[in-house]
Length: 245
Length: 388
Image (cartoon, chains in turn purple, green):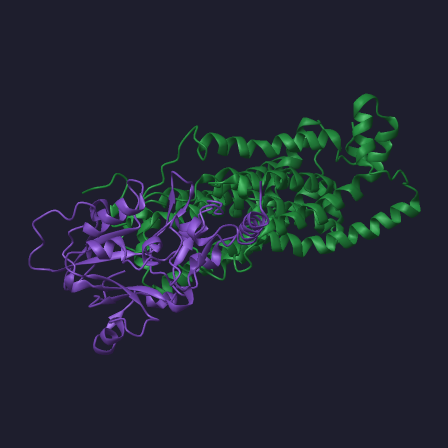
């Protein structure tokens, strides 16, 4: 028999589901965040150190496995730039660098690797254009897609200046990096950061005064991708070359 | 490693195009609606009496195309069953979220009301004279109002005028808004332009006017009724003027891009000279704009015999329709062929019998003509002197 407590519990759940569409846990597939996790206390982003990236593709493989990313689509990828003294750079990212890069590395030309992922912009055009608000910026600074609500119109894919979104052929909804929301709300780091052998990728929490990012930003010059787009990216790059787009 | 159909570097998720030929049809069809309605309003609001023979035809054309306008979008969605959410929980900052409201406003408040008021005497007459089930259809269409007395018609006329006056800015809104959906995407330099809604609007008028002209001449041919040359001369004149404005705006956009030569220019210029050469330079500009403009200019500047003039109008209008379709193609597909890194190009592989392939696109383009045929049967738009 249903007790009064059950009634409140189920009724409350239904009320919440009906009012917000779905909970963050449902959207991200995460276990409920721990009691200690308060969204208002965090503002997530990432620091990428170009000089440390060796193009091994560990991050791409880890992300793909962790998030069941369909073949041929990428929540993160790595690009290899070859920048001549004059003229256009040569860029490649074979299969998103899922298997690293072919050897030998180019000689006699400036060359480096650039890991890419959703920039979790604070002023995100993808959030702006979504016709139903299925894409949103969470209070802790992560751009997420409610897959139970997305129409699959792909306006957000067009609006992203960085090519970070795709239509997931299995769910027929927009898909992108969630900054491993299911992990970071449990006190873990992202799959890509955890599997980076050189520490080129660091999850950062701009609201945490003890996060080493603050010390790093005081002593180093950083840049974001396409700053002229005024999207306020929260993925910061150290030693980013001007040729990178 | 080479990816088939890709030159240079694309971000990995960019290789596959997101908006297909169905999204090309969407602005094309809404453009025809807006253009046909604005032509109809010439008679009603701007008192251009010469175009009276096409007034009712233009209204039915607008309705036939408007009924089909949301279908390509619906077919394109990953989750069409969720499209109702755009009405229930629209995201106010989204340009696309307003489509449903603009569409409904235009369909119900403007077009259906105006058509009903215009055809009311015919509907009432048919409700009294028709036999069998058609009588029931007309009875329903009367909405219970059988009063067609001069006093009632005077009210119809007043309300109809008011609806058309509201309808003109609504038609501007409908299509200008479609242009804004593209023009406001700052990530895409091929689209991002404040001129986009204006260019869309004038190209809409051009395509709608051309469509009505072709439909009118074709209908008269089928009905073996002489074409009212004063009417088609006037329509052709408006087509010429609108096309001149449209072409000037597009050239302004082009000159602006060439002169500014911002970071995207090299990439877009290369695209126009390669992947878009046929659809943009040959189809849109040469065959779809310059040639019809030249034909129309000849009819404006020199005296041309009636038969030849009529033929030139029809050829110019058909070429215009092809040209405007090419323009929509170049905007929608062209805007996805280059990488936002400006370092590479991809190709569009259109399926045939797939959900977003050529076959459904052709079916969706034929559907308005089928609806138009039904509407013409139901509500004959012919004036008394054209009635056989």
